[in-house]
Amino acid sequence: MNKNLQQVRKLMEENNLDAYIIPVTDPHLGEYVPAHWRIISWLTGFTGSAANVVITKDFAGLWTDSRYFIQAAGQLEGSGFELMKLKIPHTPEYIDWLRDNLPESSRAGVDGRIIPMGILRLMEKTFSRKRIRVETDHDLVSPVWKNRPPLPDAMAFEHHLKFAGKNRKEKLDDVRSRMKEMGADHHLITSLDDIAWLLNIRGGDVNYSPLFTSFALLTMNEIYLFADNKKIPGQLKDDLYRDNVVLLPYENIEEKLSQLDAGSSLIFTPGTTSASLISVLDKNLEVIEDISIPTRMKAIKNEVEIENIRRVMIKDGVALTKFFHWLEKNIGSEKITEISASDKLLAFRMEQEDCVGPSFATIAGYNEHGAMPHYCATPETDAELKHEGIFLLDSGGQYYGGTTDITRTIALSEPTEQQKKDFTLALKGTIDLAMAKFPLGTKGYQIEMMARKPLWDHGMNYGHGTGHGVGYFLNVHEGPQTIGSGASGDLKTIIEPGMLLSDEPAIYREGEYGFRTENLVLCTEDEETEYGQFLKFDTITLCYIDTSLVDKSLMTDEELQWLNDYHKLVYSILGRLVPAEIKQWLKAKTASI
Image (tube, helix red, strand yellow):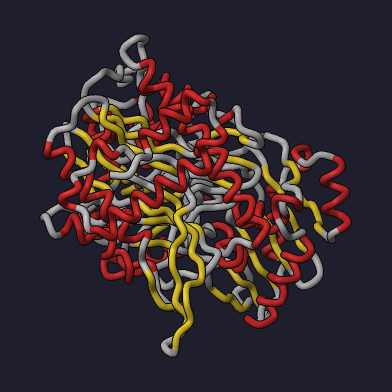
């Protein structure tokens, strides 16, 4: 039995708790969390990015979605935790389980610093009939977690204007104008990516995303930045002071919020603001609950950002082209594994100007590992690539001028007819969405069927979203835009020009392989007619697609034309930037079919 689990249960007994709830978050409720807050990984062994844990006196369970079923089943073995499979991704089904399984008048505990206010309210509403009480002042982890990693301490740095396109004063003025329209005196900003974008600051506190740990409180005259003073270098400190940014200690956020005048108004986002922060507000403070203003603003890239993103896609395409050429020439002659392949791709990316690292943990899945959408190789699972089967590679880079995310699946031997069919049906979805034309005002879920229909027509489907928003040298998964019901998105958000999204239909056969072709698409204006403004997508990712896996008989003429035109573009741009040998290789890979 898990000793840490036993110790948590002992503390539950001392605190007279019938249940303890642990979400996979930190006080900023983002997707990737610093090691200090990876409580679920420490307690259960599960390393995925989506999970909730519930512990009672005689039960311990971990809820996650279909992306992680296979991974979780392996990692939870022997941990004392039972895998609870979510029927619908990103839903709080553990709350219903607690309602159904806890006796009346039970007491459930949670650390209020890491539970969103929106989820706390849902718990309270769901539990009300059985008079189950939720208490948010229970940290049962700190006393138990010995040698816990410290809070992150990486230095912050300026994200320069040549990349950002707008200075922080302009951004602050834009946000304040919107606050005025909403009748707000204060705006609490808790998401690290919102703060980084608003102040043109980046950092290194979170794996894969260049963020620094902080809170921000914006008024009509100042912006209070709650952060570790030692992490902000002198010149940046001077620049922030010049722009009326007031630096306060990170831990002073609750004190400052408790001092806001009764009768004044505050904007906050229930989904990204912890219950602990809201609990200190004056009861007479007027609250305006909405998606944060920076979240909506940063979703629409400005002209400088778009220009930089296009440059970054070329750099990323060069790195990927060099990698796939290297892989094809060396597989079989030297030992190449999932991990060493990932390392080699990173090395090619780091050769590119302004690349600072990966944008997420590379998913390098050989054969059956490719059937796990969020597989991440470990020394224990690290498979050797051979001249047989299928290799799925989902990766991305962080550049000062943008964030990339791309998936390519290649055949390492002659593919079977079934493999070609599966690959082609998923690819048709990628292409059909890329060719979409739709009126302004359209929401992402309204066009998702274009991507799924080729698979649905054959009785096939995939369990994750079709497209997520992508940050700008920020989070690789960024809302509010989404195509589907992704966790990082808001279903009510319309798709607008300047939004960057992924396009990634897929198919997975457990124990065999997975197929996913993912590109990033930029929403742009198309034509304006008497029926209004129409929009389209511009595919900006540049990398060849393995046509040896394509079954032409399943493709429409329009889809084949798109694929051939895309390959002409890839070759014309990347061919001139790679050595002659690779150029010839790329010419063959991008030949019309």
